[in-house]
Image (cartoon, rainbow, N blue to C red; front, top):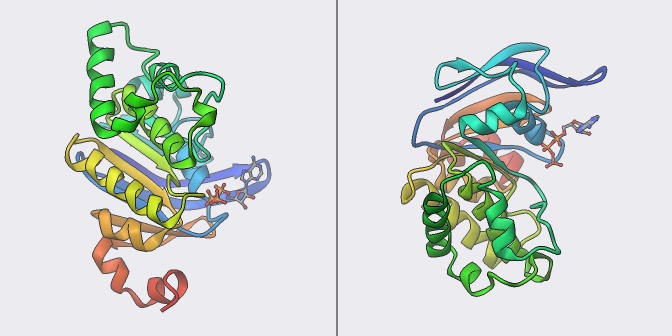
Length: 235
Ligand code: ATP
């Protein structure tokens, strides 16, 4: 479904991604794991079209997208849930969710998507009229993910959804990411620093270090890998 072919990405003269390649098949949940500053967000911003690769290309459903503007890429169905959630704090939960479907004209389709977001996150239906800025961190993350789902993604890219959440909520978020993939059939690219949880739920993981993919393979195998165990799991 998505193929990233040997991309180099720079901010001005500073190169951040080096010859990065990865692929995602339809229906998969793939994780990109790595420490702070490894280049994970830069990779997502490049797939979204906000940054252009200097070298290499990206294709989605067999079309090259790396030269297309971001709004076309959103229109193709690649939706990013940004790090830090980026909600509109003074708008209600419902208004924030509806913004995710701003490209959709069909009212019945919007209602249908809202219904499926509410069945995934029942608390959001209870809080529909509440200002998003007054929700807990975990609830705000649900709104951010729900807003992404309202766009009807073919590929949902999530940037560190567990960041800043308590250990209990972290577990819940990973369960939800897994349900979005398994029950809703959405293809997911998950970017995370939480290596253990990501590798437990993903089909395959790519390890990004200093802008390079140094290792990839099935999530469960990554958890047994000596380098991953030493560098990321403290074992
Ligand atoms: P984090 O988990 O901290 O978000 P990350 O793996 O997502 O890390 P990136 O945000 O992609 O990493 O950053 C990769 C590198 O690019 C870092 O060294 C960072 O300082 C640098 N960088 C990020 N954004 C910019 C920018 N706008 N201009 C210059 N350098 C940047």
